[in-house]
Image (tube, rainbow, N blue to C red; front, side):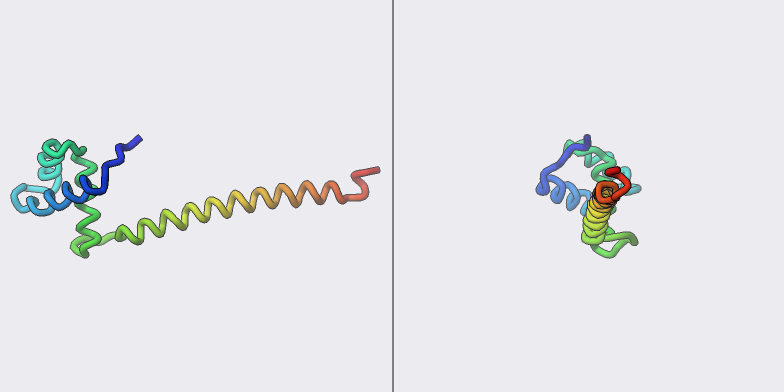
Length: 104
């Protein structure tokens, strides 16, 4: 299970990495070095930096707001599918119960 970092740690680490990106040959190098110092996994920090760049419009991709909306819609879709399955099962059950041939 992934580690859940406090928002303050995430924001501070992301800001620090973004500020220091020019000092490194690549974003990965920055995240690898700074992640170790901040006790944050380098890949986790790289994803935070990338998302911050997308949110700022510096990189293409879905924003944090859009990603949250996608997650919400997927949850809603899953819930509706489950409800639909329950309703289908109930309709089938009641159709059998109300069928006069069933009670012979």
